[in-house]
Length: 405
Image 1 (cartoon, rainbow, N blue to C red):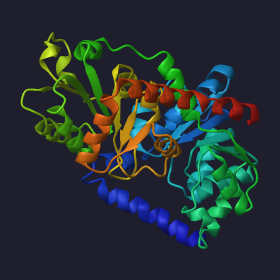
Image 2: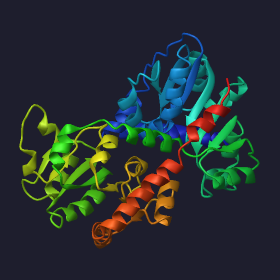
Image 3: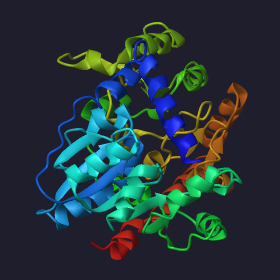
Image 4: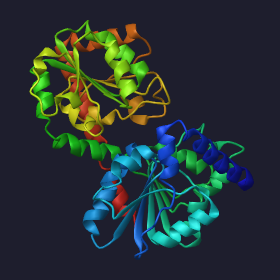
């Protein structure tokens, strides 16, 4: 099985390598792993995040270590360019790297260089050689905000190697009892149900969000619909609302902001009704003339939601929805596409009828009508959404009480 794993890792590398000739993200992935010089200046605390979303998820724990152990060197690694490129200069870390390809030699060299006292991985990413090498050196390895589902390879008849990887983990901090039971069923008992640290992160953000005066001016006392982390399929649906709700303002914050994607989005909207955020720099354009604002940069979305009345979260017509909690922390009803089952918080809000899944334009329009036609009902939903987020905070405290050097 290890031979198959090794072959799979190398095939993945070659697939990314060939894609790098035509794909910007793949090129960043390849180039970011070339000629890395690791700082070899003593022991460290190692945090790994798959991408930007996991960074924000694990950020409360990372921030605690930065504040509580200022003398400790903190090393952060990312698997994906979308995490590394945005957070490579974070003040929460002393060094930020791409995670090398998971081979025996890479794992030895990397761990030799950073000398971790402990390692903390957020949510997922289980790499055989890195985990094995940590285990061989008696370095404690923690998984925080983990979540498991029956369809994952760990729970299949052919998943023996992946189950072996799990045995290298010192403690799993999982989001729910279902995950704990799944691990228990395969003999993994070093598990604590802590909840999801994302609740702590988004709740803290909602208590003191960054003010965006230009967005407040754009809203100008109108109702505001925000479509966050959207893909083309999402944008086509939400664009259909713009003419129906002429007295509302709309903000799109696309997941990808390259020129081609932005132009396609602009073409979906009524002529001269939309303006890009980048066009506002150094100008005094009359924002009241525009119904739609397109955010063509990265990093504003979590602060934008404070101005919204309804939020649509993208990704549900692709591999899965993006972060609904950032919007929910502000007490917003959240709408998303049909691919949401992997996300506990989305399942929870749908079950409680404070989150809404749609699969077509008519369903989107009827859902928005349901939310806006009865103000008493709308306010009750908003209060329940906010309460749901608040009630699920506390994961960070549980984790920190149980992590030891």
